[in-house]
Image (cartoon, rainbow, N blue to C red; front, side, top):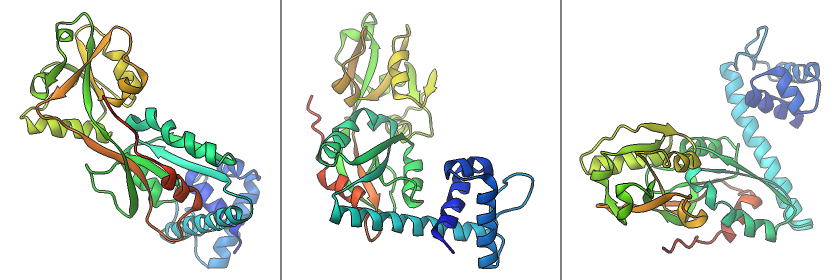
Length: 296
């Protein structure tokens, strides 16, 4: 068994297509297929369901795939550790962030890149569930996600800031004469919210339930910036995390009202897998990450 065979297997799982997996590995499709067949012969079990196209892995293949991901992650960690000792940190750090945290990621990646300029950063927008899965499966190194709303498993965490919420409305609306609005009243408006697969939406639904409401939004989106643009539609409003207008300014023609009764907040922080040895890049990013000031 060679490391390349395991890498080809993981690439096939990621791409779910022999040709695309071969292209991702910079080899020909026959080379990739031959390497996986050789791995099957060495292990004495079929790994891939055979057909005209890739349809999935056998039960044995799924088991070997999990071991392959772990082995490749350990090799990558070993390489990072050796590089750290000899040359200083370098390599690629993969970070997944919930959409509501994306505007603030540069507050973390900027200082890290300044200290470790040889490290290349990949930042991906992901749901909180996808971040947990990607951490477990070695697909990302670090996540920025909610810490206290839905249980996290097998991770080490560090708080960065508390997320609070505002309602965006047009400056020419009757609501714009006020500075705050209660959640019960907001529930009866034409709301634009994130889609239910986003934890931010599940948080807001929970707050509305706490005041006896279950609003039906007029528009749902998986883009936090789309919420801002749709708040400009006459008669519509959006609920967004307060850090968005705080850091980037309130979009022209809109006003932000504080949401009160109750005063709600959720902790957002950085997470990495609770496994040993820890990858030097992920460990270093967490070490230098400082709480993000969120003053009014």
